[in-house]
Amino acid sequence: MTILHLDASINGENSASRAISRSIVEQLKAGQWGANVIYRDLASDPLPHLTLDAFANTEVLDEFLAADTIVIGAPMYNFTLPTQLKAWIDRIIVAGKTFQYTASGPEGLAKGKRVIIALARGGFYHESSPASSLEHLETYLRGVFNFIGIEPEFVAADGLAISPEQRESSLSQAKGETLRLAA
Ligand SMILES: Cc1cc2nc3c(=O)[nH]c(=O)nc-3n(C[C@H](O)[C@H](O)[C@H](O)COP(=O)(O)O)c2cc1C
Image (spheres, rainbow, N blue to C red):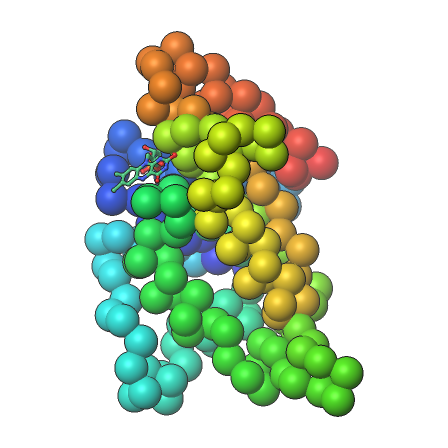
């Protein structure tokens, strides 16, 4: 099994999404002897904004296509994903490779991969919260992976900016959730 592990947080060792994505990968490795892990740090080694030339370079797409499981650390910045992660998404949504248009509409071509996303958000965005309409991280990532034929799984740590106590409890709840992923 090949695991592609991506992080995008600018917060280095203080990053919640990095801590959770690391925990997910550790759980997967514990349950799968001999798993091969490829790591990409999109913050310290950013991909440039998409250009036409970049479409010709398929390294990022090939890495995605070769992976069985993809684990993504996804912090919420300004209600959506970091641009570093968007630059990666821009390279994997490719007509003829990960989706195609058919007479009956778009069809995802990346079926069969497992995608697990570690969300870290400063606030709360559940349906009944007044800020729910500003949630463009989970909804976007679900939509984009659905489009290419994948139903992503999420582990979320929310309310991280509310108080140190809330941060602690959200982080430990999220790390607890990672235990079930390898089951
Ligand atoms: C530049 C920046 C923008 C942020 N914007 C939001 C936001 O729009 N909504 C929110 O709930 N939290 C926001 N936060 C808080 C982060 O989501 C929170 O700190 C989370 O832990 C970030 O993940 P990380 O620790 O992996 O970097 C923002 C943080 C930063 C640094």
